Image (cartoon, rainbow, N blue to C red; front, side, top):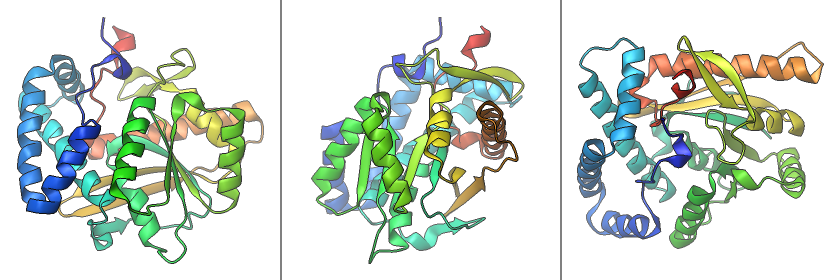
Length: 293
């Protein structure tokens, strides 16, 4: 049976590897880190059979030819995205490389993110826009990733004003804290396209790329409950630029069930649009279509 993303063995960077990469970057610069990333990606691509199988299935669904080639490019892009993310948190990513395609006022916004592109690097951008009075960025991550992320930020000894929370441990106290922070103009990032390991039954089914796919209900319900402006967002690499696409959720419905239904439809439509535009930056290396098997 195909595994969910949280059942797959982690092959990403752990705490020690992140610290080691930081020192390599500080001593030798970006190019060696890119070279290391290439060989790590190559090794993962050749050995991570389930992740590669999920990637190849995705490109078959898109009716691509030369599946093996497309899959490797996707893996390679992901490796480079990790390097970009790493550089951004070191404060070395030039904000001028970002292009806000449809800019808006994001005061107190709840961003429902996707695994298309590299939205994580935007946390640094939003702070760079107002460095005198930077707004705190609140991000929800899977528990293990949250622990690694917080450890890495602490090792940087930089005042990035970023708080990471484990998505599996959202409580009433967390909700109150985040609601207050949104009212103070802070922003929140939370993915809307991965089912939580602790809430596999709390999902909604939607048509995605002409297939039935499960998406988590929790993110959208959490966003609705907080009564903040809701945006969908992706940040994709286009040449040397990072293009940021956002879409503000609006509805004329007032009943909770109808608002949530509109929110589900709008999010999946947004996700599908940018998945088709940037398929090699679709970084979901698990079989999202497995429930049809």
